[in-house]
Image (cartoon, rainbow, N blue to C red; front, side):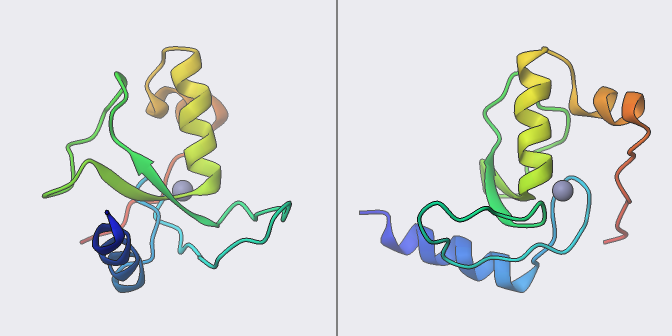
Length: 99
Ligand SMILES: [Zn+2]
């Protein structure tokens, strides 16, 4: 099952390898076991959180996210705050990418 889905995700990553949240370019490779991943490593961020602050991308319940944003969002969820508030507090506003 789901093999085609995984492949289309990867294809979409390669077409637009940028973090949905901060707009940085992300990198992806198959990590080896125990490998420490960099903050710009590509992750799939599932939009099933109650703090969803942005509209869903067309056709999907996931976006490409760098590891750093993915973890920041996980922390934000723990504290039940929108991700944008954490950015505001930390002074780390995402760079907005014109489409
Ligand atoms: Zn990011």
